[in-house]
Image 1 (cartoon, one colour):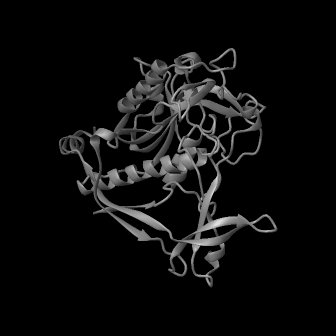
Image 2 (cartoon, rainbow, N blue to C red):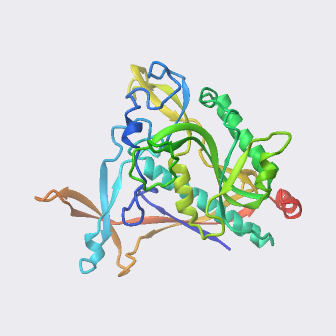
Image 3 (cartoon, rainbow, N blue to C red):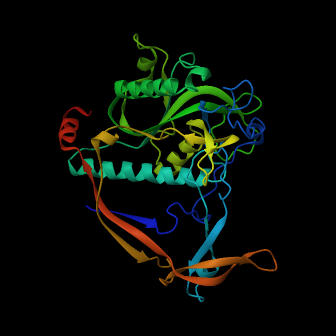
Length: 369
């Protein structure tokens, strides 16, 4: 069966507040620990980053670019008789970086959509081969808390060791593993010391280094007490979150992405004209992908093969009229209004199919990977 993916022609990761609830921003207590030059906490005694320094931060704890968040244009139904004509969908300039405080939520949604497309597509590809899956799980698992230090995980070598340990754990204790996991260096606690996992909580939160992982996907887990007492490497623990309940994959992955650890590096800023470094300024660059596909859904087990593309004008969901783009301005009440029709808003539809590596798919159908 073919898979179709619709992509916005001008802004693939555009945001509509009608379709997505806002993720909770960083708390004031976290912001108080940021500086202009050094947006993380912990690894630098001076509070300033140095060229080439690498360290972990939370999404949204870097520096925005000057254009981030600026409104480019709006789109709406072109039919003036339709109620959707008055509902402008705003398009903003964005840098696509998880570490940008302005573009974080947009980047989270983009990465969450990519994760969901891969998980759904690979699952469908396996099911065509006769492979069956159990319920979708959200599992938190943690190493012994003295296994990794903040100083270690703030190095690229330590960061890699953390991920190697997570993959080893999942492969060892999960049969027919298929999913994605995220590394979370910090837990967020209330002032009374209680850990909070409610993304809508309005209380002040304090970040505490406590490395752990979140897995979303499929598989059969070895009993938790046996995992904890493993003679070769004791002390690992896991818990399933709301087991047996229906789960929204997109919302779950978005939540896990919103406070995962992002490894980044401070690099010299270069002038776009002279191509020379600007003295005393640094830029922060993300070094690796945050979602990690594992098991039957890992990158080596299959992918998406594109077979065609087609541009088409977006249609209003209510009246089926064309959606148009509009230049915007503020009215006398300070409200954004459309002032000039720029023409139809086009979307790109990509046609293709998710496939499996033949050699590995045959092996997986026998031994579960």
